[in-house]
Image 1 (cartoon, rainbow, N blue to C red):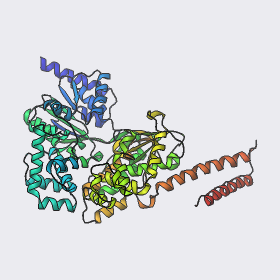
Image 2: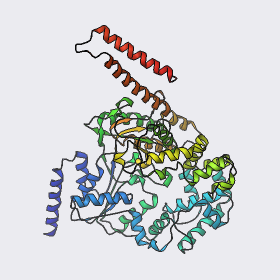
Image 3: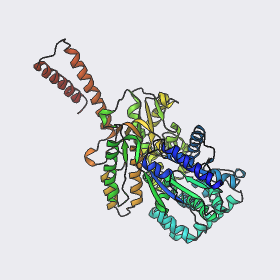
Image 4: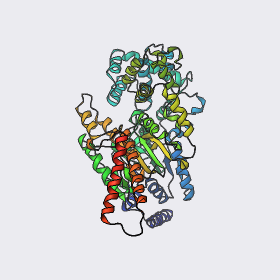
Length: 567
């Protein structure tokens, strides 16, 4: 009798969900009876709505929803409350690990090169950086032993620089010994730990999660050790159902040792291929240009449809009297874009907070002093180890530290003007995003967001030409090129109404400087047209010769402006 009631409840819930006007793809997921299910959901496809409907159809099941971070977990909890769904526990893997390992008993601090140097007695920042990076790699992997296999996996996964490879080959025993030493120090609470450490500890505890269903959100960005924790549950409980949901084309955290669980797990795969965020014509454009890149590196192709809405494309479609968002690939390109806009007296907002963009912080300040040979004023511990920006740049290249390279470039390009720029930017900042004239963001900080109008910076995103050059290089890595294409995809899919894409093909190429000159030109064209119309205000329809005069006068004004502004 009890089993009969459960079945009736299940089908009643399915009937309720079917009345919610879900697409066929959504219904296939909601009604799926697969033990292990993968869902590849494109940007804006309503994956959260689908997951909650999946949960709502299984009210007799205990369900664990694993969110990618605390902010997403809070958002999901709010939606569950609104929908009166009480049988779903929302948390993160880190939160589970923190509680199980009693991590509150440890002190926390991110491990950097200089702390490693002091602990192991090394005077070589490059060696200390390798120890720090290998330690992080180990904690994010399923590997248990500290042996040659760890070094092999690290080499295969990260493809480090030649200088790092030389250290690993000549000092492998010392490297493994130092990693073991640091892990022991952490375990014995003799030094601060990182969040990666207690997550690894949790994995080694072989945790059992007593739920009927486990839903894993943002599965494309989970690390190997996270995937290991989830897969353990199948061995622990043969009846458990696991649903992995994510977007393979949004995997952009390779630098954090993320793996794409959707491509590694052998399970039934379903898709959410329709985005409700932007129009179908725009979706087809994104598919067309990005698949040119994916084809070249022999990677899976993007399949995506849009909604019935119309998303405008191109520079002239942007309404600059309304809020728009500038998205860049890097902090460096974003800074240049900010400088172009600062002169207009606009109210600025930075996604995630201005301080997180490293335009002027302690590191940049020290690089600036190093650049100007004011060594006594360099107060950053790592930067003080170098005698010039040239040697620091070599270190940044050897450690593949793109953030550090961007900061060096920022200093080399703007020097002491950075102080003035920083002051002016701060004067233009506001705290409320809705009140801003312009929102600025990098692609990584914009992930999970959507905006009405978007401009992608034009000089730092991947292009078809850069894909080809990468393929011709001796150190070609298809996965890194794929991630760059994914970064383009993430930025391009943040938009709802109007988008100005970064150039992908060479013929489309235009610098940010020329873009802003183009905007000035566009503004002047509108002004010229308005002035021309005002000059000939008549009640009757103007004769054809006067219309031709209007056009000639307008063209003359534009040509004069071009001449004055160096066109």
